[in-house]
Length: 279
Ligand code: NAP
Image (tube, rainbow, N blue to C red; front, side, top):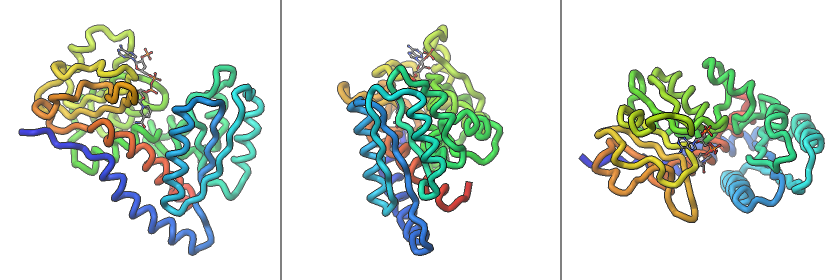
């Protein structure tokens, strides 16, 4: 049987219609959901990601406030900006685009975001709350993946999920979200021995590595669910070898058009929820 395509792009488009009507309801009550985006430095990829998030806001009738800080910004300067946004009642969500220049203490700046405005799910407090099953905005990429798995009714409970990557914004929260849905989770990383052996046992594989096609299709168990969070614009591929995967997996995310659109959509949804004060 051919693998089912988990169409993140299509799903995000459907979700946008619902978000748009809720935004309009809220605006009728005098509240415009507003996302503040903070970009530090001149990384072109980061600038593109921020632009895409701002475009999504305007498409849906939401407000975005763009803050651009120079490449020499200090930690103190960035902390001050975040504090101003925390104090600004018009701002419902704050996105600090990762990565910031190396002289900035990124963790301190993430954690300075008020958890009620942490719509990108980057604070330690938000991560802890999500892990404990308390209401919190999950980190957007894994939360978007979970929404996709739910939509396509992919069974998670009791399944063996292997997450390749353990970054604070992707691999770690992904593992915790799958664990919270009763998967048995293995987390692999750069020091893992026998990566192939772990993946061969996986019912669900999540590639969150940042290395083009590191995970080979021959490592995937027949019938596994394959989620590729990676995107490499130059190579035009993800972290998993997907050519031919349709004859091996039971379901898979395409690249592009899988995880990426759901990440942005989840950020926008979280900003709406923050404006509705529902989380
Ligand atoms: P990251 O911070 O660089 O983390 C990469 C992780 O992969 C680390 O935990 C690293 O292990 C592990 N790793 C690296 N080489 C490995 C290897 N040979 N074998 C096993 N594990 C290895 O990257 P990230 O921010 O999590 O992003 C991962 C991927 O997701 C990238 O392709 C990125 O573009 C993509 N991404 C997509 C979206 C989206 O919206 N679609 C959002 C965020 C990220 P160590 O911890 O041991 O170093």
